[in-house]
Image (cartoon, rainbow, N blue to C red):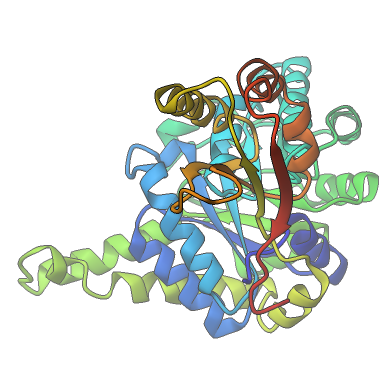
Length: 394
C-alpha cells in the first residue's frame, strides 16, 4: 500500500533538495494522468483536492476513487485537502481519507489566522495527520482561479512566519513571495531573499501556491531555498482544455471523442514538472523512509441485556450517526452474528485513519457520551481489539 505519511514524504524532499508536486484534480482524467506520470518517473506525488473546486465534482463520491488509486499505485502517494474553508472541512476531509490537510485562513488578520490554524492542528494531531498553514496572501489576479482568490498580494515576513509556526505547530508553511493563483502574464517578481530567510528561520518544508507561469530557473531557485511542495493546477487545466479544443477542431463529436487524449496531456505536463522539480527516481527512497499510511480496525464483540432487537438497532443507529463524525473515523459498521449460538451476538467495526485515533477517539466527548449513556449500560459482556491489516509492505 504506497499511501504513505505525508509529513515524512515532505521532510525527505526538504532534506534532499527537491519538491513534491501537489497536483489538484477535478476528474478521473486528472487522477489517472497524475498517477500515470508519477509511476513513469518513479516519483512521490500528492493527490490534491481543493475545496474551491468542489463545484466541479462531488468530493464524497470522488474520494473512494482517489484512495483506491493511491493504494494500488507503485509509488508513494499522499492525499491532501487543499484550501479547506473551516475546521469542519478538515474533519470531513480526514474522515474521507485525506492524510494531509490545509485550512486557508490567510485572508484573516494574523491573530485570527493563528487561532483558526491552531484549532485545526490540535484536531489533526489526534488523527496523526499533518497540517499546512498559509501566512501572507497569494491572490488570483489572472486566470481560471482569479475569482476564487481575490485581493492584493501580502508578503510573508520572517518574524511573522517564526511566530506563526511556534504558535500553531503547523508541519508545513505556504508562503507568499510573489506568485499568484492562476495564469501569470509577464515576468513574475519573486522575493528569493525573503524565501531564503524564512527557510533558515523555520527549517520546515515550505509550500508554494500559484506555480503556473514560473520559469524552470525560478522553480529551481525556489527549491534550493526550502520549497518542498508545489501546488499546481492551472497548467493542467490548460493542457486538458487545449486537447479538448484540438479534438473539437478535428470535428470530433460526442463526449468521449472530445476528451480523447486528455489523460495523456495531463500526464505529460505532470511528468515535465516532476522531472524539473527533482522528484524522479525518488520513490524507493521515500518508501523506505516513510511509514505506510494504514488504517486501524477497532472491533468490539458484545452481548446485550435489557434491550429487545428494536432497541439494539436503535442504539446501533445512534452510534453510527454520532461516532462517524469524530475526527479520524473513516467508517462505522454494525452487525449481528450469523449463527444463533455464537459466543457474541453483536459487533462494531470502526475504522480509524491512523493509530493516533485510538486515544483521541476514546477521549472524544461524543464517544464518551454515547458509550457511557447508551452502550456500556447494556453491553457489559464485551471484548475489543485494535488491529491493522497489512498489505504487500508487511
